[in-house]
Amino acid sequence: MTAYVVHPSGKINGSIEVPGDKSVSHRSMIFGAIAEGTTRVSRLLEGEDVLCTVDSFRKMGVTIRKEGKVWIVKGVGLKGLKTPPEVLYCGNSGTTMRLMIGLLAGSSVTATLTGDSSLNARPMARVIEPLRKMGATIHERTEAREVMGEKIRMIIVKGGGIRGGAVAIPMASAQVKSALLLAGLMAGEKVTVTEPEKSRDHTERMLKGFGARVVVKGRSVTVFPAERLKGQKLIVPGDISSAAFFIVLGLIHPNPKSRLILRHVGLNETRTGILDVLKKMGARIRVLRKKIVCGEPVGDLEVRPSALKGTTIAGAVIPRLIDEIPILSVAAAVASGKTVIRDAEELRVKETDRIAALAAELPKFGVSLKETKDGLEITGGRDRLKAAEGVSHGDHRMAMSLAVLGTVLAAASKSDTPTTRIQDTECIATSFPNFRALMTSVGAKISETQ
Ligand code: S3P
Image (cartoon, rainbow, N blue to C red; front, side, top):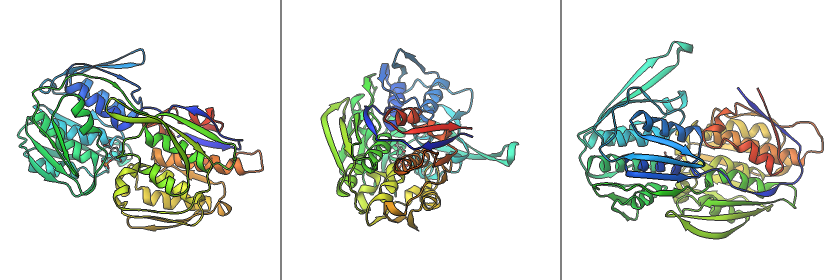
């Protein structure tokens, strides 16, 4: 198990590109695989989660290779997937498992999926139940593994039988929405999905780009049967969820001369809740050079240290920043006044229960916090904070949020000795393999130990 040790450092400065967007990267492989012709993808996120999606398609007969910096997918068409000879291992990736269950349900192949212990404990009924109502055949089986009595969940999808129709889902979830739309697309059936709040819309945008007919009306999306999708040339935007760690680092760093530029960050409306909330808290963030690339808005962000004040984060903005709540909680911890986070019960079923994990970790750093059923109440204030030893709970976004907090605390420290330590940091590789290298490149001092 690796750990980060955070050492005192000076100001933060630099212009960086964060890795490609995780959601867009998964979808580029999925639509590339089921399109006809070749799809070329630049700036794919080469994190473990996306590589699980790549590996699953290779097992189903799709040729995916990398030439220089470009990933090349030889699409097999909507009917061309082969029954995989092995179990599809989805690792830590909820997106791989949920989107793949939908896609397989609409196909004519049978496949078994599993994941790591975190993924095997996450709710899959949210995709399996609506898919069964649409005619899918999906079974679950639990196996006890020899080692440490761990239980592994196997999900067996026997493709075929999907009927179209309209489905209202009870939670705002791009994974559930995309799974149901994919089932319809693969089966040649028209499907409409309605959500209680709008979640990220990368599936809708990319499907249009690949030539499908997609109609969006408020919180409802309809995908019409398509004869074929056509391979595309894609450039993946930088992941705003990864940029978020640097945005908050740049804002709350104690050195007033700090300045960060984050280039080519995805600025899709369904993902920019973090910018809206931080601006409301008093953040000095400027968006520069905004343009559309492959159907997704992108731009550069300039971030400077800012005096943040507490706020309320609730309602329709929650799905627009759901993955950023751990790092927003760090921002709230240094802000003046109280921040209330509500309507975020979905955090309880992420890579870990993030509400419980934040409530366990942040107080170790002196943060005053109250856990509620659907969020947190954080009373901010730099003066009460102190360096500490934290653990990631096996969750990449927890690990990186604590590393940012540690860096800010180390910068304010008068001593030369290492201050914060974060245990169990391997998980960072699922979404941001070069996180520590980029932190170092802008001036943080973080070493890794076993
Ligand atoms: C994702 C959707 C979100 C998000 C996850 C990626 C996607 O999950 O938290 O990191 O790529 O569709 P939910 O759909 O479960 O909210």
